[in-house]
Length: 438
Image (cartoon, one colour):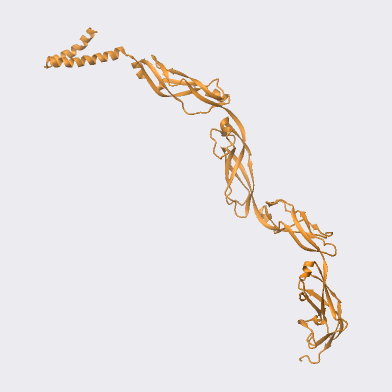
């Protein structure tokens, strides 16, 4: 080694001898030069051993496809990173990069559940070895891949145009197959889509995209749907409010009367095709025969609905209440002075100066003094009547001079009242007036 230093130092000795510097200064410079030469020699020729940590090397999973072929999948897809210590000669160690180190975990043979998988490690550089690693295994949860049918759920947003209703919604298909890790598939409640029905006025079909959601409506990731879209068919119908008409036939037995008829409900909302609904104003009930009925009764009945039409928010039967009460009689008495005379000019009271048909006076025969008006109805109606509610008269508008037997007419203010007058006739004389002007 001394000989080598002597050879290496000759150029420097010659260089410094040519310079005119003191021996002391020359010794100092030579010391520095020789120190540098010695360090270079040691580093280059000796190349000492050293170690080094290389960080953040990704762990590669082997045989992941074979796991998938067995219906299994690694759940945690986050990249796993480890740190590796390498050892070797300095020159070799310094040349190593992360790309030269391969770290892997073999999934072959592992099943569903939590697994600890040993880490395998290799290095491609010669003369360098892996001396340590930050962890010896990785924790992996492996789940089973399953396929389960889930219902299709389509949320309707918006509102149809006024006067219309979304009567029905049909989804094709109604179920879809959800595939993925069992943990995620079990969290799926339905395959949900959303359809907008704003301002629709007729039957409409739309294709709606689906996505998997949980019970709270949150999207579930890492699953696939066998069908990405669903065909949604919406039945849009016209609506209209119409009356229900009770169809009562027949009459109660003699001595009884219908006092009121009502139906519940009295109105319904129809839905159906616009052209049919627009032509319906009311719906009659099925016939209700009261020929033998002597008391108030409630009948359950149906209504006849045209084909293609239905009732919104109501299920038959309809209830028709027919109120029937027994009939009684009440008599009102009148005298001949209460009898009015009717002629071509209207009604008038009769006295000796009354001009009938403008040229006659009239007088009643003496055989009748009292006229009875008999009214037949239910007690409540009868109790509210008085004599002022009736008009008793004879119609002389078609008669001239002479003596006649004329029918007595009695009319109630309420034309629906059943009225009988006794006697039914009265004698009356028409005498021509000698002086009409008086």
